[in-house]
Image 1 (tube, one colour):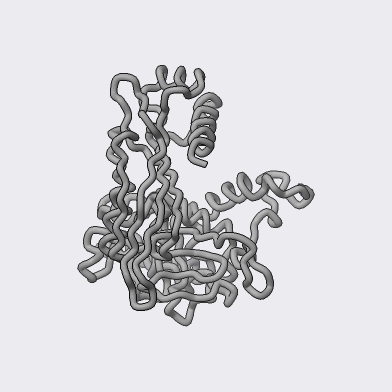
Image 2: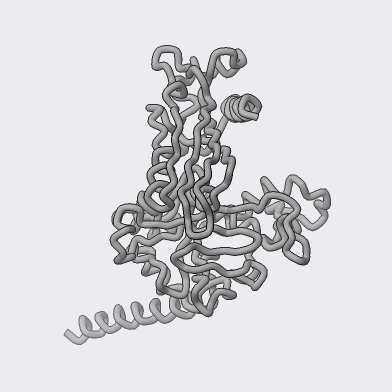
Length: 363
């Protein structure tokens, strides 16, 4: 009997020790560091920013990571007086609201959250100047890696309880915790204790009321990246839809049209019927469509009309022989599943050249 009691106490002691150890670790280890986000960020920075870095002397001999590759987001395209020298770079992410009790987020389960050189935030959290030290001097690499964090426990309207728990326990977490712009912790890069955030991830209880919010792929709210442009009433918007859409339903464009009408009272009128692929030939009549954006009257602006140019990655008559040949051998091209992360040389070149041809036709 005493042996069983002693063994029971040992289990309790072991459990208490594990809890204490993990609590201490959560105090001194950034909750974003022991996820996959930092590795994902480093690889993206190395691939896209490192290519323009001429000085390779500081690169790590093992990882090939150069600390000079990354840039501060607040310095992108701005001078010391915050004057822009070109278009402002808007990086779209999704603030996950799976735990919100607001009825308007029952289906969406997320809202748009923008990261830019000037301000970071969203209407439901407010905005902070990026130059004030938001998120501990946010880098461009962390911003665009979060914007592309497609695999995440909380994924906006794609979230389900079972998948959320599974991805958290397997540590398949590309999203990240950012300070809430409305909180006094906006200069902290990470929470003081990460345990609370991990529990929120497992239970899918992320919202906008805590000091830290969970950001993931902007596609978990708007996969075309045009929602924030409509909010700003841009006169001309170019959209490249590179999502997998084998049925030709243009569901991502439909999502943008629906949300723009509901949230801004903006009507987007565009005919995409000629972009649909012929099931027999695999070709479309066109891959570029133009439409109009009708912005409503507001308190400080009158009604205006803009132009939308929509690019759809499909093959058309006149495309190069190698593209047609690749599609004949791979009928699902160019709408292959994004789960395929390991492209062959021919597959990579086919997508690259199709994108180049589509852009050349549009511009």
